[in-house]
Every structure is written in structure tokens, then in C-alpha cells.
Length: 287
Image 1 (tube, rainbow, N blue to C red):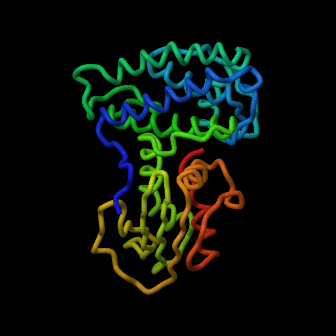
Image 2 (tube, rainbow, N blue to C red; image 1 turned 45 degrees about the vertical axis):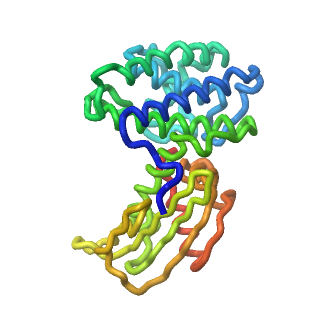
């Protein structure tokens, strides 16, 4: 069953997916009062203003603007060096109003889009990325993925659902499903012979199947049996437990973003409930 709507994979489609979700963040911010900017979100430790600070900070950095150095306090939600780096862009903007930070994003976004839409820029052009120089298509994919997750953080805090069928939503779903074999075999620790079918029921509709077997290294390996239109006929059909999990796009992406505990996630199961729980506990691809 092909994903619908399909996730863009070329530079143009990925840039437009990023542009749409980034503009949605701007539009949501324009509707906020300072009290709204102070609302807590499902992203641990961050308010709505912090979400916008993060997006503005990353896009400004990618355009060559550098924030002043700032010490990041030992916040509970900052757990590693990468977390500290991400938090610094938020921390340096904490003394500013929400509307001021939003104005920064409104100023930098056209610069970013002009860069990403530059004539002559191709999928394989090397440009600055969040983690270093990278292919332009990969940078656009990472930014669409990240910004859409934060857009959903803001929407949830404001109780204004939307954009669950957008190109960036499809980018997020597809990127999360690509990681499913590794998550099932390694993090969930399912035994060889296990099969997991995961249905995303919409608005983005997708289906993925994973079979676990033992690799040459003696460790469990997950193989994608199918995703979208692809079916891998070489995956061995070993006997073992099978579980089918169904979730909405919202439930799947909020869990995959690490925003909601399994206990707070709506899903249905056919098969082994305990096995499904292990898969869902492992189903986090970003924080």
C-alpha cells in the first residue's frame, strides 16, 4: 500500500515541504499573545516561545548568523552535548518577548528559502547542515522533519490541530518508518522470527512490515518486508510471533517524536499485546 500522500524526495519538493511547515510556525506565532507564548508544550522544558526560538536559531545559524555565547544552566531536559548545543539558541533568546523572536524568524525565513531555492542548487550540492556540510536534499529533509515536529508541538499546546496531511507530515512519517527495522530488532529486542506490521491510518496513510532474523554477527536484524510499494521477497519467513499495530498519524508521530508516553498514546493491537508494547516503547526517532 503506497503512502498517501507520498513523501517528497527531490530537493524542490523537500524545500517546499520545509517552507510550508515553517510558514505554519510563523502563522501560529502571529496568532499568539505573550501568555500563549509562555504555554508549556509536549517537548520537555520548552514553551511555545522556546519552540519558535529553536526554529529561528537553527535557520539563522544555517544562514551564517552567529548567536553570542551563553552558558546553558543544568536543565533536567538537557541530557547531552547535542542537547546543550540545541538549548543554547533557546537560552540566548529567553530574555526576549515572543513577538520579538517571531520577528526574527519572519526575517530569516525568506533568506533561508532564497538560499534553498537558489538557481543551480541540486539535490547533491553540498551546503551547511545542522550537523555539518551535507547534501542539499538531506538538509531540506532534516529541516522539514524537525520544523514539522515543532509545529505540532505548538499546535498541540494551542489546541489547534492541523497540517497532519501536509508534505512535511509525510516526510516525518516516512523517515520514522525507515528506522522501524532497527528499532524493532535492536531497541525493542524482539526475538528472531518475530513479525511486526505497523499501520498509520491517516491523514497520512502508510504501512510497514518488519521481520526479525539473526544476522551473520549473531545479533537480531530487522528487515523491511514492505513499505509503500516495495516488497522484499528475500526476507526469510520464519515461524514466530506476529503483531499488528494501528495508530493515527497524530499518535504515531507524537510517539515517534518522543512527545507522548505509550500510556498516553492511542493505538489498537491484533496479536501479542506485550510485544506491541515493546515496539511502541522503542518507537522514538527524535526528541
